[in-house]
Image (tube, helix red, strand yellow):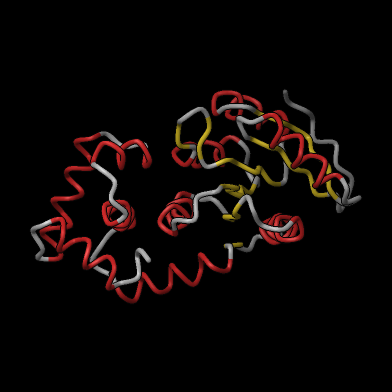
Length: 214
């Protein structure tokens, strides 16, 4: 379902993209409890989001990180291209700072966790509308730590390393990161090369030493 942005001056217009109807309904109720916010569109998957966002023309699109088993991040540049001036806030349960960094790199302006308080989401929406970036505070701290301690690794390699250290198989890592099995194997090879470590045990030990897993 889509809507038309008929906002008055100062009104924050928002579109919601999430594949769970209950989540969308809850977000709409939460946001419209604020007199300064209007929800102008709702989308249940990426194709509908890409088609409907230009008609809704929201100030901010609240985008679920993954819908129907498909990562939404790759669609961020196309969405921004189709709706000039629109900002995107990623709303997700995924606390991995690698996802947050990738979202910002692709053009998203904010990254908020689904268990955040309503006030935080509203703050994020208003922050990005002004042209600034909003990142969940805990994730910002983790990203700074990773920058300082694991600079040779890419964000994706850090994600693979973390999941590997948590005991996941290559197949499970591929499913969680929406990657092919071959790509995961390539990342593991790069980890061994860059870190000079060969065994899984060595990689796990490295991840623990650098705070990637508890």
